[in-house]
Length: 214
Ligand SMILES: CC(C)(COP(=O)(O)OP(=O)(O)OC[C@H]1O[C@@H](n2cnc3c(N)ncnc32)[C@H](O)[C@@H]1OP(=O)(O)O)[C@@H](O)C(=O)NCCC(=O)NCCS
Image 1 (tube, rainbow, N blue to C red):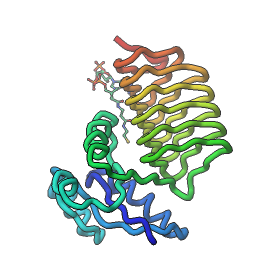
Image 2 (cartoon, rainbow, N blue to C red; image 1 turned 30 degrees about the horizontal axis):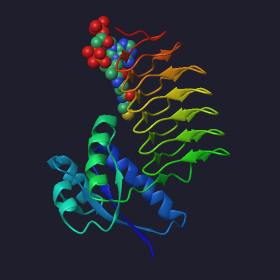
Image 3 (cartoon, rainbow, N blue to C red; image 1 turned 180 degrees about the vertical axis):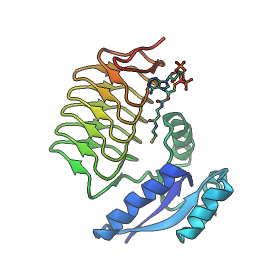
C-alpha cells in the first residue's frame, strides 16, 4: 500500500521538500501526498499551496490530536524548530518519512536515518552518516566518512569535507566550506560562504574567511 505523507511547514523549505516527494513519485516511489500542516501559515504561503493544488490540512496541534495515520516529513529549515517539533511528534508515536531526491548521489555505505531530507544535486559520499532529521539542501556535498548528527541543516551548495563531525543542531550556511577532519560543536551556525579552518565550539556564530567567532 502507498505510504501517505503529510508535510510539516508551508514555507519555503516545506514546498521544496514537497518537490523532493514529487520527484520520488515521478520515478515510481509508492507514496501519496496528503497535504500540509502548519500552525501559522502566511496568507501568501496558503495561496502558493492553493496555486499548486496542495491541500492545507490545518494546524500541527489539530493533526496531532487526530488519528495521524500518515507519516510526517519536517519541511522546516531551522534545526531548533525541528528539534522542538520532533519531541511533540515522538510523544504521539508518529512515524517520520525519509525523502531522498532521485537526482541526489548517495555513496556506498552511507547510513541515512529517519526523517532525513536530501535535495536535488546533493552529493553524499562514501561512508557518511546522516542522523535523524538532517537536511541536506540542493547541491551541497558531504565528504567521505563524515558524520552529521541529528537536526543538522546543510544549506545549498555548502561543502563538508571528509571525516568531519557536525554535532547536533548545527546550521551550515549556503556555500560555506568546512575543511577535513574538523568538528563543529552543537547548535553552532556557520554563516553563508564562511570557511571553517579549525574546530568550532558549541553555540557560536562563525563568519568570514577564515571563519571567526566571538
Ligand atoms: C551569519 C548569520 C547567521 C548572521 O549572523 P549575525 O551575527 O546575526 O549577523 P548580523 O546579520 O547581525 O551581521 C553582523 C555582521 O556580520 C556580517 N555577516 C553576516 N553574515 C555574514 C557571513 N555569512 N559572512 C561574513 N560576514 C557576515 C554582517 O555583514 C555584519 O557585519 P558589520 O557588523 O561589519 O556590518 C547569517 O548572515 C548567515 O550567513 N546565515 C546563513 C544564511 C543562509 O545559509 N541562507 C541560505 C538559506 S537557503
